[in-house]
Image (cartoon, rainbow, N blue to C red; front, side, top):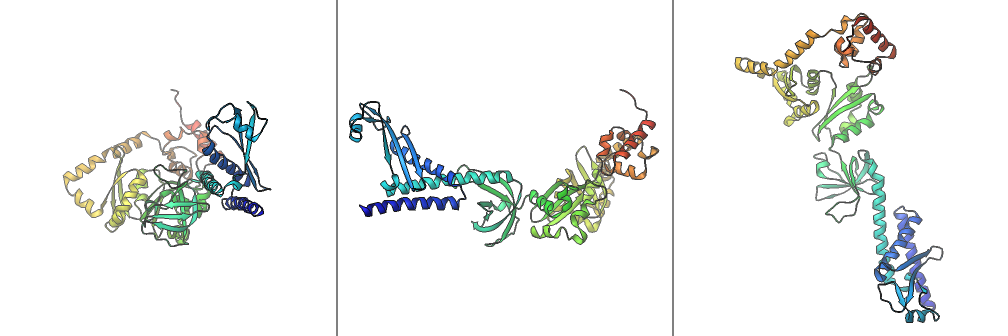
Length: 453
């Protein structure tokens, strides 16, 4: 009898030790683990007695004891599915039992059966995995788009990389990798979190599924936010970013302050600021493009580093014709056409690039020249019409060249456009203070005659 008690006590002790180890490993509070344990016992006994069974679980961690309480109502007859106990059977347990009484049966499952304890372990482990998945999902679901550091774990089929990102693993599929990258165990892997899913259909793998990316434009944007103080602080803004991972990235930037050059701030002296980003991207080419008010200037900037001679645009068709020097033609097109293709994406214009020699040859034909001039005639007509009907800012007494330059850089080209701006809107223009905005409005009120409509 003594030996039997030791054996049973050992089962309980081992089980509670297992529970403690699991809660420590999964970084779960004891209260949560006990709740899961209670549910696990109920689930196991409901499989035996049915969902109708009136069951309760009493867990005593100090005594390392689990008691299952099964309550059944005494009836004349009963079946295994009605939650009752027959009177004759009830009187075997309690001699004075009568109809309508509730018989309470108590079991210690850990002392009753080792196999049951093992089954409970399996149920508990599955419940803990589900809870852990939900906790990890809750932790990462709000981190979409964030930069994260991890460590390479393994390849799958030489296509998918698994990355240790702390409490779980992230997945970096081939399409989200920079082409040509190779990782070895222990390598640091910097990525952004692209998406987080708790579960996926048509898969038996436990979640959550955390998709990582190194090939997306957002990955480069996050690197700039970390490495360039002006971008982090908001004095330089990234307006748009396009990318051919492993080949080239183009960033369209602007400054919110007149005294800061956005391109210089990103590149740094002799490129020192951008070097760490280029290294992280495996020496991918990065072009920083300054935002310009006119489409012609913007397109010329986007085609950089090519030497642009002329830009003509057709706003109706969003088409641009760009002439570059003969030595710059291959640079303008770029390797496999990446440079001009990314410039098209960045500016939303279909850009046609011609070298000076190609342009001269085409224009030598009267028919070709007529066709080319007809395509872009609307641009010239609109420009001439706008120039003839508008009043230059320089016509206003008191508007200095510096103020006129600030206004023009912000898209205000003439007096007719300036009168549409309120004092508050003028204050929002970088480089114009409250006093200057008031002075501009005063000049307008004294100089311009407003017609009521």
